[in-house]
Every structure is written in C-alpha cells, then in structure tokens.
Length: 115
Image (cartoon, rainbow, N blue to C red; front, side, top):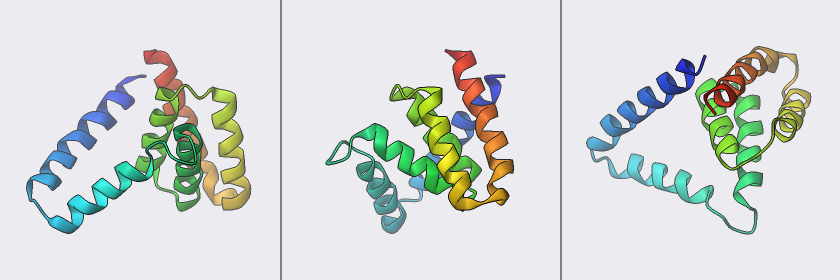
C-alpha cells in the first residue's frame, strides 16, 4: 500500500521541478512563503502541520491532506493526535469532508506501513 505514498511524492516532486523551472517570480515566492510559514516559530512545527491538515481537509484538497499527513508523520505526531485533528476538520467541514477522511486514513496507513 505504500505505493500511494511513493507515487504521490514522485509526482509532486516531478511537477514542482517543472513548475519552478519556468522561473516565475510570483510562483517561486508563493512556494517560498509556504515553506517558511511551516518553519518553527511561535508555534511549533507539529502544531502548524495539524493546522495545515485541518485547513486542507475543510478545503477538500486531497493532495494538501497527503502532504500534511506525511509532514505530520515525519514530525512524529501519533495517529491519535492526527485523528483528533481530523475529527475537528470533520466537525468544522461537515459530512462533505467524510470522503476526504477516508483517503486520509488510507494514506496514513500507507505511511505507517512503509515505516
């Protein structure tokens, strides 16, 4: 099942390289802003990733959810912590978020399976 993790990361990396190769100043600045926004600050990286995860769920962006799930996993967040954040996303986002919750669980399981 970890193929979904590898496929996601390979595609994301390939397309980011392609996008950034066009050398568009605005796009590069947005990418840079995104990177810096999730750096350690007044809020720790774990908290920021959970915030990003909840916002991504509510906005129903599956790629964003995958990105923040993997970042959360890499930061050492537990499944229980992530599920609690996902529960808040479902509360705020409503039942329309449930299909994205299914995909989030599938991706988290794949992250755990790959170790």
